[in-house]
Length: 132
Image 1 (cartoon, rainbow, N blue to C red):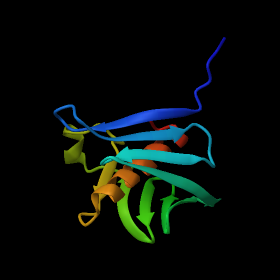
Image 2: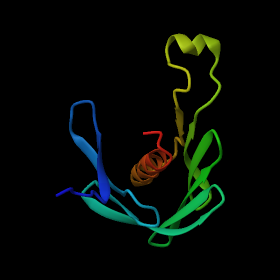
Image 3: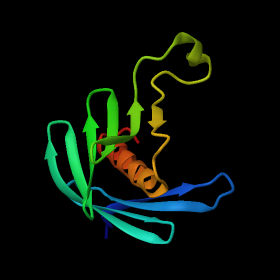
Image 4: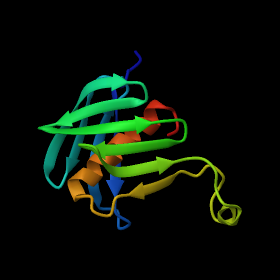
C-alpha cells in the first residue's frame, strides 16, 4: 500500500543544531500553513489567489506573497518582510556563488515571529514553484 503525504515538515535550526521553528506545509494549494516557534503554534489560513499574488491571514493580519518571474516579496499588511531574488549576478560574485543562487533580503526591523512566518511563506513558494 502506498502512503500519500499531504504535507511536508521543514525545520529551521541554529548552527548548534537546536530547533528554532517547525513548518508544516501542505502539498496542495488553498490550505493552512502551520508554524511552531517560540512555544507558539500559528496557523496561516489561505484567503485568496490572484495573478502573481497569494494572501494568507493570521488573526487580523494579512501576509501576502507577490511573485514575478525573478522576485518573490513576502509582505505583512503591505510592508516587505523578506525578498528573494534569482537572476543576474555580478561577475565578481560568481567566484563565491553559483549562478542563479537566490539572494534573500530581510527587513532589519522584522520581529522574530514575523521572520518565521516569512520563512514559512518562502519555503511554501519554493516548494510550490519546484525550486526547492
